[in-house]
Image (cartoon, rainbow, N blue to C red):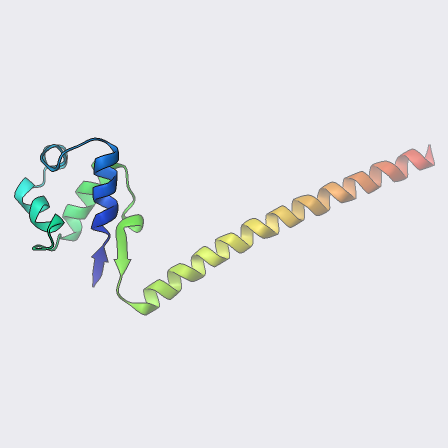
Length: 111
């Protein structure tokens, strides 16, 4: 079962300057449901979170906080792979630039 980062949703709502009532109108979710969720008396369903994310410009993946340690581990592995890919690209670009510089210098010496 997943949990959701309601603080992130609330922070985004406040960044936009919206009241809970306005978020309710824009998302089609009942305002009392949102008030109760904010106070911790109600858990929101996935489809409600999806509606909120859509109007707030958030991704579901940003809001979902999994309670399953294997899900967290898999998410961390994906993030680590992405970081490693970015680092590898930077190293490849630097090596390519060095090779191009060396090739250019060698050509000048031959001339």
